[in-house]
Length: 314
Image (cartoon, rainbow, N blue to C red; front, side, top):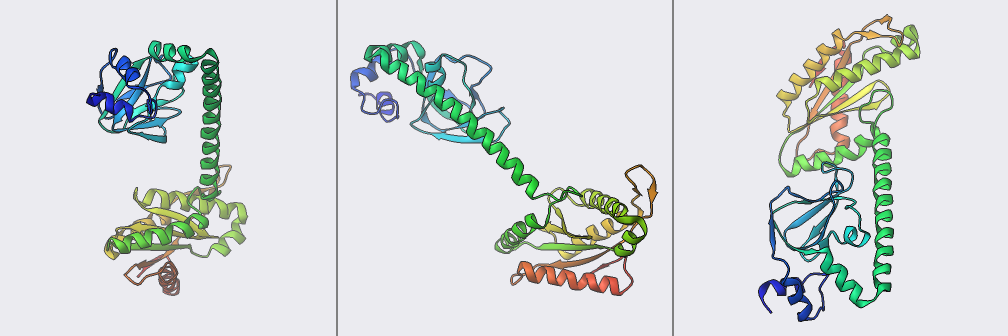
């Protein structure tokens, strides 16, 4: 048995197949080399081959080539068999994640092999293929719904920022990561000055509009890799990854100034009074815990308010 026949014998499709079957297949095809990023199978075009993966990795994408991969395939598996049996275009995109070596087998050879066994076997394979396609579509749809629900559960409905639930999960994880990598993690605890008075004079709807405006300030003022979240009520917290105190102070001052000049309007467009914010800053060290980090920032926030508000303290 030559080396290619040995590789075919190691695949799931030809496991325990007689050598005569392997040699028959080898008479009609040779291995192909696939470059990374190549789309081997696509719902937009018909497929006429089963491809045995001799080396490398394939990724399966369901909705589009840019959608998250739903599965990875490694050496020894095959792709394209369902479209061959079902006589329809593939239901997903198969993309090479790395350099791959594949062995193509034309559909006529496979169909002849199946027909030689028994027509019932051919019918059974077709039925199983249709069931598997339908089941895969349901799984992907369910994953999409779960992802959407999870996303909504982690987002504050008023401001569109992350919420306390997300923060309770993310802060311990990011703090541990920063400590393991010996990189600084700073947090900003932000509070609207005299918010109770603002609510009393402008009503709760006016207070909501002020919080929405502040959420926009935090979203714009934060960098791409920062995480602003609504901590509770009129308090917000921003996680600043890989940011020492000096950098965090600069970001905090930029946000404070932006909040001071931010225009606020009612839902009908009528202008509302502006707001100011106080910010407490804390930076992590090797012994920090999520609780101690927030306590430190809260202490600085209290100091900022005591010293006159509309300022940053560290």
